[in-house]
Each structure stands twice: as C-alpha cells, then as structure tokens.
Length: 216
Image (cartoon, rainbow, N blue to C red; front, side):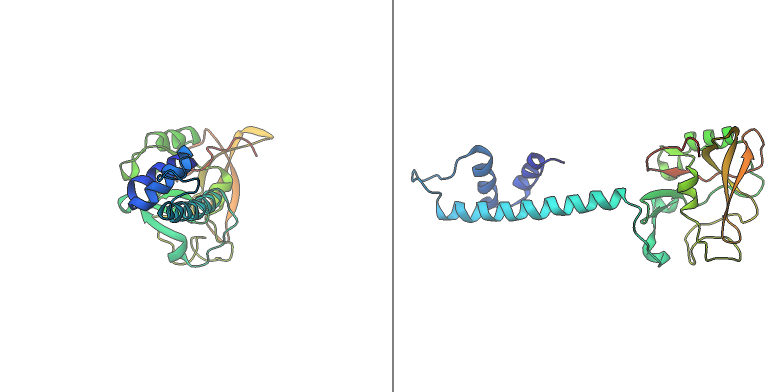
C-alpha cells in the first residue's frame, strides 16, 4: 500500500481535524481563512497527520521485513506455530510459510510427480495454492536437537508426521535430475535422495513463500 492509499484509508477513518490535515497536505491548501499562514486548528491536524504517517510507514516496513526474513529463532512452539485455516494448517512464524497440519502418512507413498500433483489440487482449509516445498523449506521444520522420535520442535502442533518415511521436496539433485531431495524427520533429521519415479515417499504440502525449488 503506497502513501496516498494510506492517506485515503486514514482519511475515511480518522476524525475531522485529521482529515483536514490530509487535504491540506495533498492539495497544497495550507489555510482556509485567507491568511498567509495555516489556521491553528489546521496546523494541529497537519502535525497529527504527519506523525501518524511516519508511524504507519515505519510499522508497514517492519512487517514487510518480517515477512521476508528467516533470521528469527522462536524457541517456544506455542509462539512459533499458529493454527490457521480452520484448524487444517499451521503458520510457521519463523519462515512465514503455511503447512498442512496433517501431512500424508502410512501407506500413501507416491512418486515425486504424483506428490506434486497432490499439492497442486489440494484444497486444505478450503484454499488452493498449495505446492511441494523446496528442500530448504521442508528442512526448516527440522529440530536437529531432537534425537528420538519425530525430529520436530517439542510441542509442535502437527499430526501424523512420520519418522520412518521421508517426504518429497520439489528440489532435484543437480548432478542427477532423476533424483530428488527428500527429508526424513528422524534422529536429528536427514536430507536423502530418491528416484523421482519410485513411489516410496510421503507428501507434505506448503502454501506461500517464493515457489518450488529447482536444483540443489
């Protein structure tokens, strides 16, 4: 949202003096009483408007940086993860990625192509836009300090996560394009390689982020 759009939004919601300040700033009309200086009430409106503009722009910038960065470390699972989309997905506040709360498990092993299509047509939380994650994205869920059981942060909100089957990623092996990277959530986490045509791995779809990985 640009500055002028912010002005319009505030103009509709703020009090009359603040709206007067916006009009003065945008149109160059600095006074209404015919004098060479702004009227006193208009001065107050302008000062208030400018102060709120600076605060809002600073807040907007901070939020934008937060949405794009991976520099946060949130140790508490209750603070890091938030249940969203009607309880069917989880927002990871460290990466701003949205994950299925219930990834595939058990006998639902697929080829990599079928796994990608599963995410493509998914309607988890009554929303589309799901995809297979890159190896870096899926690996970001691993807690390397967990050595027993599923290698996810303690008290995580996910269900059905397997420690015995790896999960497909959208990242292929650069030196061998018939192989794709997979992530196994066991004993600190492992990145493995699997033939893309072998139905041996599970699927965990993600929403948001920069898009699918290519080669690595």
